[in-house]
Length: 110
Image 1 (cartoon, rainbow, N blue to C red):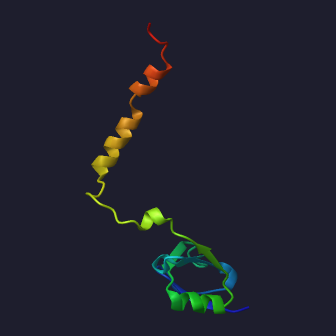
Image 2: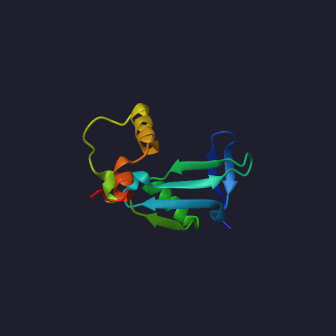
Image 3: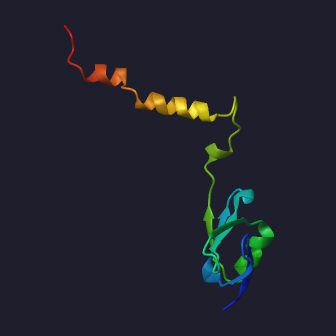
């Protein structure tokens, strides 16, 4: 079996087999990546995979899983970015009683 060398941020260079690596190739190339569990520290490691890395891993026997980015994720976004305060306000709104739902379920007044 082929030995593949990769690097762990904590342990440095480690040796893996093709079964130890999960390669995810994206339709939008910049989002491709590979993951593995470091055999020394047992941390899950995720690294970007450009075309060269994809070719090397596949030539070493790693099977590629292809995935597509939803078109909505690549659309340009207008307006200000969401802040933590925006998210908190949204969550607080969700926790309130829904006036419309309570009126819809109430008996009709005639």
